[in-house]
Image (spheres, each protein chain N blue to C red):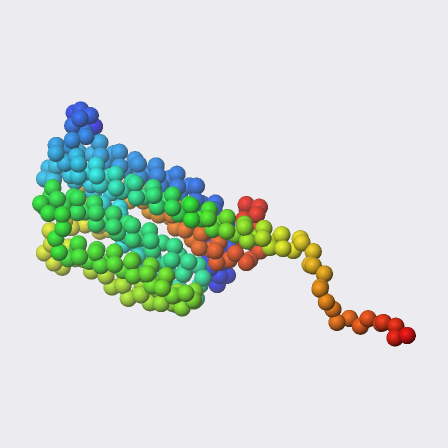
Length: 78
Length: 247
């Protein structure tokens, strides 16, 4: 240990605020970047999953019967 | 040889291999980074000239080191994009540019806070600091250019050209402390010489540089996977991965 006491460790002979501010900003930003990156990947996965489920639903529902058709219908002319 | 090259360029192959390596990168990186920080903060001896403020070196140097080496990696990927049109190289550039931006900001911020007790000023327009600020703008420019062009292929090429033009800044940053008379101290580590510090000062620094490298590797994997997922959504292997959780 390079310091005699815990309070000496915190104050660092007057350089404490500079040192601790740097470490705080460094680790907070790094952690935030890791969190954002993970969340972005999860969002992308969810978007893919929703897309696939939407497609699956669409193919499950039977196509509705056509309202009109041009098929020849034989109607008696009598 | 060409087969390996093609395999390397395949997003599916990358997805599988990166998923396997990511836990190791994360755990190893965090452990090394914390070990370097605790050692540097509490156990490394005080600097005879700068006192305790020099302890900022254990995060300042890793951030600055990575900021530059990420740019060099981006430039290598840009060459691959332009010459071989490899998709994965472009994915890499897009995925890591924001990480490079944050690292450059961290290097500038921790440098400014270190400068106050050491030089008596937060900022000075000297060669090292100014060239580092230009690196920050280059990263910002790469991100902005990529967002500004909608077409994926033209964006990839424009970004690659910008990255390659900007690479001229890297040797300027590196040698700025030797070419010009600056306030900034010269490099701590050199390939050809032993560090001028004692081992109990430079070993923790080496640990935190390695740790940040590994954490960067993990970040790059996560962000590249995100980009690949949105680009390759229509392929069958992405569908299988998303629905079944394996490649």
